[in-house]
Image (cartoon, rainbow, N blue to C red; front, side, top):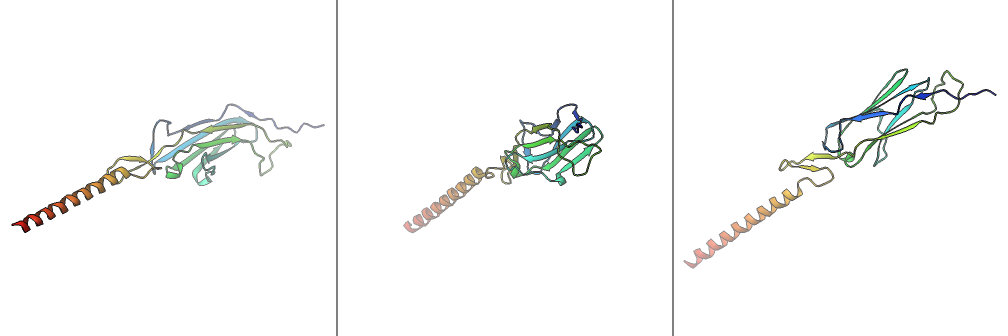
Length: 174
């Protein structure tokens, strides 16, 4: 009986990094870059897939730059911070998949290596248009500012109305 298993070695776990830290926020429309790389031996390159942990939506090839050599696969995800990313994490899964085109091997098994990397939770903020405070995207921007602004307008309007009424009644008394 012939052994048709593939000889493949992943030299180290997937190495990943990002320009976003767990303790800092990113502003809406900032560029977020995440990169994962794995070194392997053999003639079957691993695959990397990126997705949003909350929506489970996979990122498209338009967002990903893939670099493959004979021993390394590097995948770089470049996205723009937006409201739909607030509170989510980005996940990169590295694995082996059956190739679409035949390889120069008789092996029929798919290697079982899998590695999952998860980014820090994304805290996307947006600048407030009214008082330049920064608010999380998930909240109404500056609602307390708007509320106090209208309260001041109503108070001023009521005072002015009261002044006019008092002037009118004192003019009638003369």
